[in-house]
Length: 237
Ligand SMILES: Nc1ncnc2c1ncn2[C@@H]1O[C@H](COP(=O)(O)OP(=O)(O)O)[C@@H](O)[C@H]1O
Ligand SMILES: [Mg+2]
Image 1 (cartoon, protein in one colour):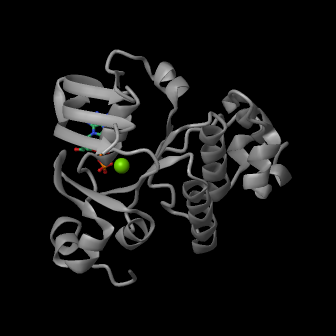
Image 2 (image 1 turned 30 degrees about the vertical axis):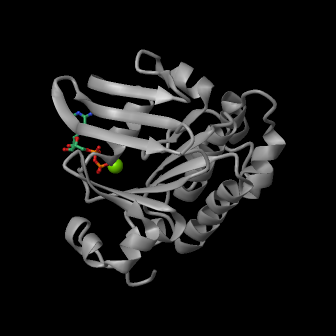
């Protein structure tokens, strides 16, 4: 197997001295689609935040393309190609849509590229971030992260609270990015069926630990895994 894009070894991290991520080891390969699922409060958001350098790291190793990133501040991790679309949909509410995207542009990325991905944002370009619907805010949050040209795109419950048509549209965008091949994706999703439908590999967290990891095929073959660890079946897969 080739060197992973991201390698976590025995990562323990949390908020101050409170440990939430509890001894996680995980390799993420270039081009992979990973679903990260688990019940509420199990540490999914904290794990993504830890990968971005936004929590207190207690111990472990973290490498990006074989280089340690443990001591790197978040902005340097972003410059290397780590991108997070946070569950809180961080956008600048007092800036316009256009200004929000411009603030996220890196390298040769352009506004027009963001608008091609999300035509709705072009229509709303002069509106303030705070005037957008939930779905539009999520599009803007995703566009901002994508304009930083992430090699690893981490999506933290991107569909939460959004209308089915918007969810379908966003899943189509993620599918397109994955198919284009340059973006490795970690999708955190409450809808286990959607996450499993999208991913090649599934990791289930339980109280900050990896309770299960396997291919999508293996989880589809044994529905009791999801019932036991996430509390939902796979009715629609
Ligand atoms: N800023 C914080 N300070 C202290 N504890 C937190 C903070 N954010 C989350 N937690 C706790 O960390 C645990 C994991 O939360 P989280 O990573 O948000 O889980 P998930 O994303 O799987 O729902 C929960 O017990 C939560 O209460
Ligand atoms: Mg969360």
